[in-house]
View (cartoon, rainbow, N blue to C red):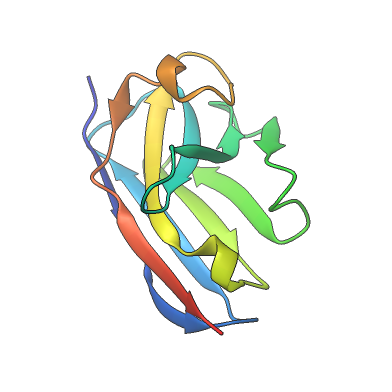
Length: 120
């Protein structure tokens, strides 16, 4: 099991940028994913990266705007978010799991989330 802590959320105007970080408590070789959940909605896949960083996946809604990356020396995964719009407002979670997948249920460890709010 690995503990995950997200940071970097905040309030930003439409068109702005934020970089989220997810720090792990120890070195691990799992895939990492970012998901988000707005009030009244289910948890939604955003992006994922395999353990080496060589393979990534993105939701269609964020392709070309968001970039996932990882620094295994720091046990940290990042989500660079550019061109934010109000529809991106949500609680953003990072998860760790053995597979590079869009499916939340395949991730075994989760952080507590960081809030991203985009004003129009």
